[in-house]
Amino acid sequence: LPNAPYKDVSQAILNVWRPARWANWMFEVDIAKSDISANNFTFGHGGFQGARGNDAGGDFFIENVFEELDYTGEFFHNETDGKLYLFYNGTGAPPASATVVAPQQQVLVNMSGTQWDPVKDVKLTGVTYTAAAYTYMN
Image 1 (cartoon, helix red, strand yellow):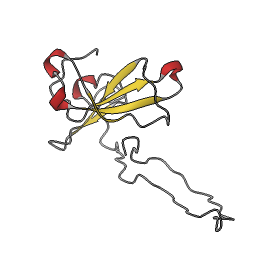
Image 2 (image 1 turned 180 degrees about the vertical axis):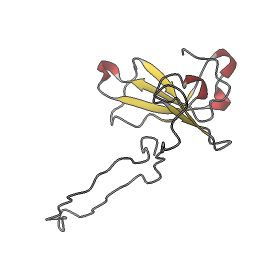
Image 3 (image 1 turned 135 degrees about the vertical axis):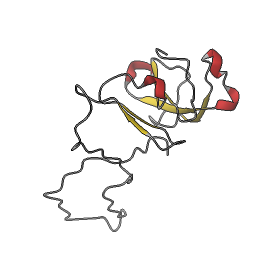
Image 4 (image 1 turned 30 degrees about the horizontal axis):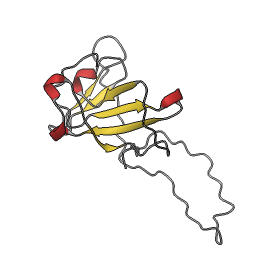
């Protein structure tokens, strides 16, 4: 963990690659069972991504901790104080005309059918989808 120790891991997500790196699992940190001062984290909620279990993992990384905000284009939203931190991809301060998109919707388009009554003949044209809120921990 390159920038540890971390002051607050309440929003942290631990990402662990499956063997052979074809998918990864995401876990929240179980703060009650972790020794944060020793950088010893216990996996909490998660691990259901990738559709298969395994007793071994591979490489890992951590996200959603302020101290790892160290590369251009990265951001961190502190849910406690509501502040959004951005590692700007440029020199100097961001221009006053800069915009930030904060996706709120997890589903942009939904069409539901059944085996017996499927959705048919739908065509979406002239639409640009740019952002959706993450769903990997749901």
